[in-house]
Structures are given as C-alpha cells and as structure tokens.
Image (cartoon, rainbow, N blue to C red):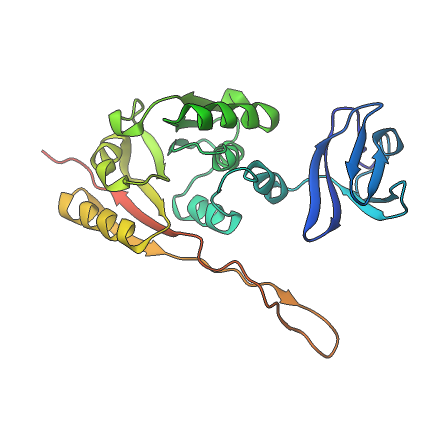
Length: 260
C-alpha cells in the first residue's frame, strides 16, 4: 500500500533543479508559484511520486522529501553545513544510534536535525547557540521537523563551558573553535571524537595548533570534500559545468584519556 499524502504532510514540490519547494499540505490550501497554482485538495489521498499540473498547465512532481531536501530547505535563510560535509562528520565522528552529541553553534538547526535522526530515540543532541535570533529561528525549524525529545537547546555561548560530559562526539561550527578544544576533551569519553568545521585555512591552522600543543588529542586530521555531478547524455556524458566545490574544512581529533 503506497504512503499517501495527508492533511499536514510535508511534501517536496519539484519543477526542476533550481525551482523546488518544501511545503506543508493543508485541506483547502494552495501552493502558489509563478508557474501556476496547485490545490492541495488535488493531491491529498494520493501517493507520493505523482505528477500534477498547475492551473497554468505546468507539470510538477510531488515527492516525499528526503533528508537532503529538508536540510537544504532549513538553510535557505542562513548558511548551512552542506549535506556532503554533514555526512562526512557523522561517519568520521562515529555518530550513530545511541550517541550523545554536543553541537555548537546551532545556526539554522539543519545539522542539529541531521544529528537527531542519526542518534535515534536512544541518543541525544545538545546544541548551543549564543545569538538570540538564530536560537529562536532554529527552535522554530526544529519544532517543525525534528523529534524534540532527542534535542536539548542551550541559549548559551559554548565558550562559557559545555554542561554535559561522557559524550560520544563534540561538533563545533564556531569562529574560534581553538578556544574550546580543552573543554571538549574534558566532556568527551576517552578515544571519542571532536569535529570542527571551519571555512578558512587560518581557522584550521589555529585549531590544529591548539589540538597538537595541548597534548590531549590524537589522530588529528583535516579533510575537504568536493562534490561533482555527472551529466549523463547519450554520446556526450561529462561532468556538469557547475559543482559544489569548497564549502569548509573539517578537522577531526580523538580525545586522549587523562592519566594519573
């Protein structure tokens, strides 16, 4: 039995790669765009994956949104950590079902939402955000999409101290992550991971220097992930002329145990 669209469902409305939208369906409601209007009553009760014409005759696809679709939509008003980088952080930092993760800053809540799905009902995400506007915006986003039983939000500067301990991972998206690495080591279980995301070389140099000089970290490395789509056409398959190149650098390190 196909999963059908219901009143209150969140759908991905697709016209093409540059024109697509995430919308919540409501009885009597309508989706408006410059390519026409779609009545939600015309899609309620029908399966995801249908094609439907707007009142102007344009054909749209109606899909169930993927994790990637929702993550991108959460960041349309703010810069987010791209899915290619989020996936790398989850894999490299060993974030999985049951993990307890601290994240700072929350930003749009995009990465918080991804982590909350990764840790499952037996794990938890603790997220720190100093800016009030970002905190309130992220809270609104997360309450819309996430299971808030898995998330604790702190309206606090993480540089004032991480409240949690015995953590499986700490993830920083900060301007000055090197100032928080000692507190992260204290809060982590031995041999567990710090992941620090920074857009510039200068930031990762300072972070790696702080990690190395502290003597409390091992297996320090920095990665950059590039993503290129291939345009597949008979007789002229080639890479597209546009790609997701540099987005940020990810530094990973494992917390060393405190020895007597």
